[in-house]
Length: 85
Image 1 (cartoon, helix red, strand yellow):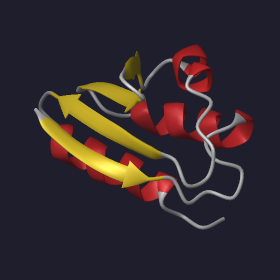
Image 2 (cartoon, helix red, strand yellow):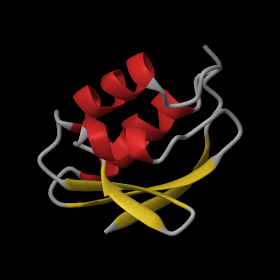
Image 3 (tube, one colour):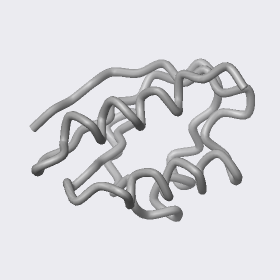
Image 4 (cartoon, one colour):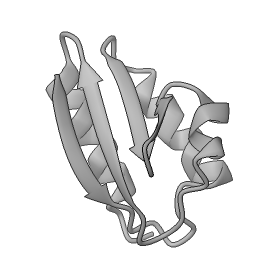
């Protein structure tokens, strides 16, 4: 299991379009991937789960993955959230 704390730098946070892109990227990996905010943990491959966290810019979240490609998954998803777009 790989875990990483990430500060979301996306201008709109992880809302709508950015959340969809995040989930799309998460689904490229075979590992089980989770996103956690304020002790609420959701499946990062679920658009409804990710949207339910209401992640805005400046929010600290934890990305965790467990599986064959866990390190690649966590690195890739962390980079998405740290883009200042």
